Image (cartoon, rainbow, N blue to C red; front, side, top):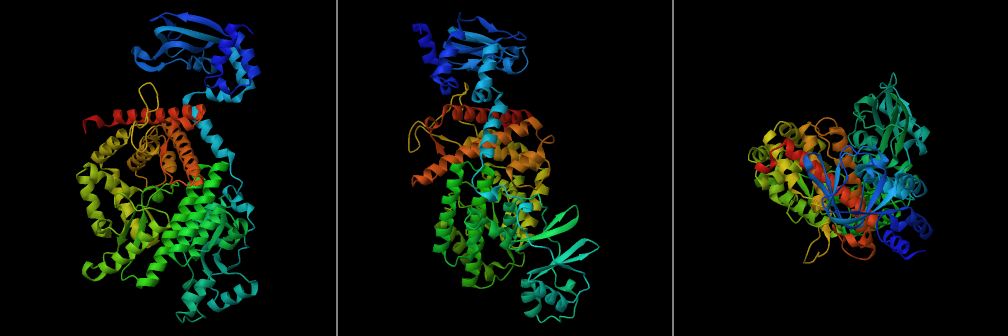
Length: 618
């Protein structure tokens, strides 16, 4: 091989994406390239001009210009340009102009196409920005973990046969029928319509304990307004619903007909040592130390799954199940310690836990909604003790105290329904930075323990009020726009220059958190009460955000979460406290490129917000 070809081969072996190619492939590729010298100011490729080369910058710099010669990007040595006209339309949408004297390698179209066919990583790298980040996110999601529950559907689970009875059956006859068939529940059905369910727990709590006449019809003690699932639902979804609502039976309904009933025991037979089962097992722990141990074990197993390729949506769901279980169990233990609550309450999770998007470094964010029957002089001492027991217990179990004191043990985050509604109205009426930060948490509101009705009342009131609060929308847009991605004008990654996190970037601050805020605004503007970021983006697509923008943000969100979880899992394996500060040098070249793509998508969508809302003037 000549000295010139050795130099070209060595250069290709040092840059993305060619450095991943086998040596023989690089040696065969080098002779196909031609060298072109471009003087400063020379146009390499102009608007509407056809293109037949992928160009690799050896030295110098090339500007990518859009309409009206707006500078879109500057490519430095080691970067390429012109690929969009090779994989898409042959007509260039941009102008490529040398900003200084430059040396460029030109790869013919046919060489590039054949190289891409032989090496799928090359094709993926040179797809469009949104397609590349989407491919990376899908690869992580499709890699899957070696745990069945993540992808097991209800129809794959050996579910219990649904035993049913008519609504006029007596309580005594219902109990006899359950005993004869050795089942723990009986569905009440009339003309194929599901009316309700009666379980062995209902028999004990509503019949025996209350001394109800067993000759009365079963409809008087059955549970109505049932949650149901279709057989296409995931086993994980069934467990999450049962865990959240503290129920043990879920009817399976397909096309309006009951096809079976899934129980916690059905799922337990599937899971046994699975992390989701470990999380659900938390409800049987009897002390804070036991809860701490169970939560730690669960997060360690989840960390292993992350490193095995589990998708971020699934792992975040598992972490959230465990965190919910700890909080719920702490309330049970607290009530055993301090007695029955004097008035109804709802303990709500906000932030990432409220959205079911917890990662391994999530702290606790929560609040308490009290019935309007609450009397501060009489009842406050009880709820102060109870919430301190819960919040401090969560801290000991691994969910650290909120740095901003956004916790139910803080009296400012413990109010009645009417007080919450008035406070929210005040916050939205005078949208100052602190007030906005407080107000937006109402939209990530999910009841963990206590009365669903109380929590939902406050949440629905906030959503209804916020939908038409246009001034608030503009301020929320401003907040979202200020979460700037750690990206320079020329798409370089910005890292901390000094301090504890020197040479790292915060992947949450201008990354996932920016997407969360934009999705929240899109959903609020549409009047939706959804709390999950991914579902907010899906439901808002084509309404308050373009379909293309929604898809791009979904892909960026999935990719950033996958990188975050992967990094935090490695920290846990190394015995470190997980955080959001990632050193880009620890990522592969492809990962860094995908990271730039994700941040670029965020920046582009922030610019779109700035067009819709006068955020710079707020």
